[in-house]
Structures are given as C-alpha cells and as structure tokens.
Image (cartoon, rainbow, N blue to C red; front, top):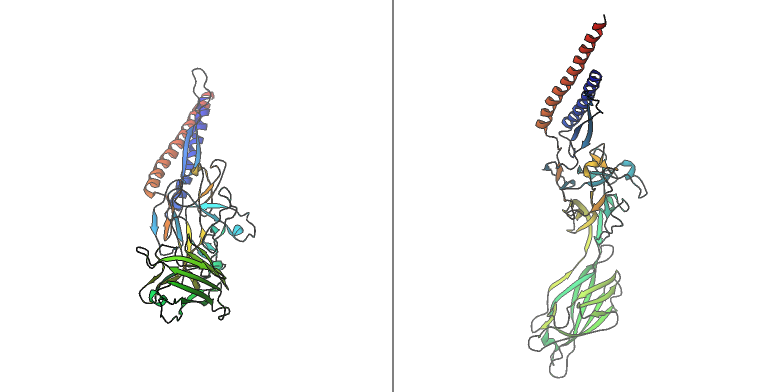
Length: 434
C-alpha cells in the first residue's frame, strides 16, 4: 500500500502542478488584457483511511477559480465611452445574438470594463463583441426600471435612436417690470407688447406675444393690467388666453402681485404662480409669481424692462458626443448646447462574486456558486461608480506570476522525483525474486 499510494500521490502532484502552471500561463498571456481577472488555484489534501501501523498517501486535489473581486488599476483614455467600474460590481453586456434579438430575452453577461464605440447600427460595442446594456430613458430624461433581478427592460445601448433631439418649450419665466405710471389717471393707455420665442414639438421657433394693456382710471391709480396672450403660430388675431392682474402698492409689498383673475383660455395657480395656457404644441406654463411673492412679474415706477424672460426647450440638435456620469447615466451632448440622459447603465452584483462563471472576452455569468444578480444604480448600495474615459488593467502581477512559476516548476520536478524513486524501489523489489 505504501509504494502504491506514494506513486498515486506523485501522479496527483504532477496533475495539480500542471493545473497551476496552466493558470500561470493564462495570467501571463493576459497581463495586458483590459478587464482580465487573474486565475488562481487552490490545493487541498486528500486523506485516505489509515490502517494500524500503516500510512497511505492520499495526494492532493486542486480547484481553480477567477479572482473576480480583484480590482485592476484604472488608466485614462481619450474615449468618453471607455467605461470602467471603480469599486465593486460589473457592467451588463450581451453578445451579437442578444444585440440582434428582437425580444427581451437576451443572453446577459457581465464585465468590469470595456472600450465601447458605436458600430454600423449605432450600438455601443467593444471590438471583441460585447454590447453594452442599459435601461432607455424617456424624452424628459427619466428612467423606468421594470425589475432589478432580471434582464427584463435592459436593451443594447443604441446611439442612432438619439442622434437628433428637439425639446419643446414647457415653461416661461416672465422676469419683467411693467411701469406703474401707466395705470395712473391721464396715462396714454397704450398696450405694451412683449414677443417671446418658444420651441414647438418639432424644434421650430415660434412666437408667443404678450400684450399688457393698462387699466387707466379717471382718478388715482388702478395698479391693474389686462394681459392678452397670442400664439403667432396659430391665429394672430385671436388671443389664446387673457387674465387680469392687480398689483399691490402697500408698504413692504409694493410692486408685487395682489391678485390674478384668469380669463378665457388661462388657468392660474396662486400656490405656484404659474399661468397655464394651451399653444399649438400643447400646454405651456408662464411663471408670473404668486401673490405677495415679489416677482418675477412686478409693477414698479420704472421702465418696461423684460430683463429676466427665460424659456426652456431647445431647437433641433445633432448628437456630438456621449458621456457617462458616476451614477451610471449615459448623457448625450448636442450641438445646440442641450444635454440629456439617454440610458441608465446599472451595476450588477452577486452574493459571491468569485463564484461567477468565466466566459470569453473578459465576461462572466451567474452560476449556482455565485447566486442571483441584482442590478443597482451606480454609486448606491455596495457597488462602485462608473468612470468614463478609463479602462481597467489586468489584475495579473507579472512578478508574482514568475515567482509562482519557479515554485511550480520545483514542485513539479519534486513530484516527478517521487515517481522515479517509487519506480526504482519497485524495480528493486522485483529483483529480489530473481
């Protein structure tokens, strides 16, 4: 039993160290591979049942694993869609089959980094064929997350779907002073016009004209105005809304709105100070201020001064570049100066990250050992941040691998020596019979 078990132990040692050599070879070969996670081996002894006064060598067993939890150093690049995860977690990606699938049931893999760029179909992918996955954002930049425990709702990030953008105007801030002297007895009563540009649903520039007609009393001052709002994109002869506004002239509140009486086509919310009208492009809010709030619309003894009139929205813009934020939002930056979220890239995490199954192209998939994944928003919970203009280097330490290579070579030679010695002893035993 002794010689036989010694021979078996030596053979198991050769096999174990050969496996160790294979992991070292793989690590060194991928020392310059971005996102590569080094492979490692773990030796464990095998003990056989022993008889009285005897010992049988059990040998050694070996287990291999990928050290996915190890963090490779981040290096800066010039590509905004070179994306890495700084901290725990992995980016969701799919392969060509998943990218061309028309259903939501796509193969899902994970990777720690990738140099993504648009392909001929506008999909962000790496040269090795990893397609970045994310949740699409609505036109207003909000993201709906159907579930965080499956790939439902995730889709390949497609740039061409967001190549052009037009953002209609939904709110105008009426930062304006109208002269109090125009509401005094003897004033001319001539209406003051203020044209305001806004953007319709197609990104075209339209004009909203606001006419301020003072209510001139026989004596004293009325501090009252009638505002008519006309959409020149429709019928310029018919106002779309009217409202009467009275201003306060008391101590401490002089110049602020006292009351608003909406007319046909207008709705006023005294809590927010918003007047809602309907243009050809839909509802539009005009912020004139709440009663007693002191603005933005005021009436003071000064000139007609539209110095703070601002409208949101943007004309048609062409996508210039993409950037990713620390919280995983891919934002499109357009040549009209507008910037909006087009996708949200989640960060995947599993209970045992080193239990993930390794696939080609530095990707990993869930296994029974890893547990189920959960999709976090970047920079929340246990996961790290997403970093653009960066790639994660291989976690291989060349000096350490070369040291392990020498130790493995010595161990392999020693196990070979055991087999040689057992062979000589068996030969000696055979010679005793002759």
